[in-house]
Length: 357
Image 1 (cartoon, rainbow, N blue to C red):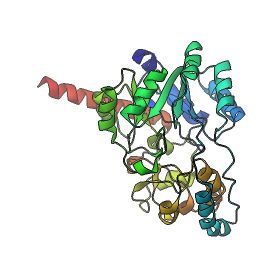
Image 2 (image 1 turned 180 degrees about the vertical axis):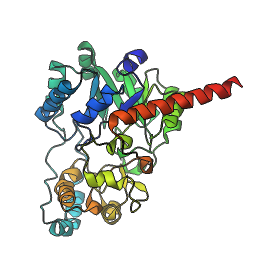
Image 3 (image 1 turned 90 degrees about the vertical axis):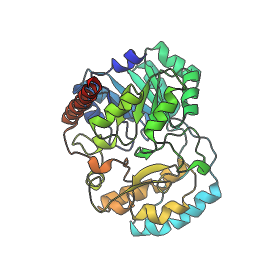
């Protein structure tokens, strides 16, 4: 299986599927054409929206690519806590002259409809975030020759994915930008995530399936480090966020290296689920009070975030970013893959030379 995974791309570099517009067909095609593995993010899109992006991507490249799906979420949110948070955000809605969204807009993200499309018209790889699919689902993809990857944040989650029949796991360290892909959203474990290198080692000693490593990776030497630790490939999100092909908002791109934003934190402020982003006013003021309620809080704040972006105000946007955001390089995506590949080769050569001494 390791060869099947790495056969999808010439170099072990995976462009992370960043939901919300960043990871579209242009970015995925540019990465794939340069020898990496491009990804489409189907999260927050309709099933037809996902299908149209797949068609567009196929028109841009003949190289393999992946599609990421969000798993349906259990109905575990406290409606009273969501209503309290809604009241807290009333002033924000007034300030940005917009309406707060309906928290009950749906919990399954069109999961079944997206599965039907991907099984009817298969793509090379499908990954899953926020949980592990059933064995029946993973077996269905195996029958149409689609490789499957499950995002995990612990060795136990990796073991569950292997038992269910996943072909590989994407091991996400606490350094990663955006949402933590935990299978269960337990507020008691907030901030208790594991660093990527430690997590790779734990997962490597627990499962036999291939590992894609994700979390704060911005340089080829870091890719060399995770490969040496036991990963088969490295997944980078923030590094590709600032490329011209990324569909991220210009304010979001600029914030990555803006000295106004000096650090990242995990927060529930924007979505009700832990996600790492640049610390801004909205996060500071509302993060401590945001309930564990995903995707209800995501739906609630969606209009606010869009209104802030339209107003040119990054202080109320979800500026998702990994811990390595200050290392972002504004290069075309294909050129970034080439630079990372050269850095990786140099790091490997340096390690080999040291080992030969």
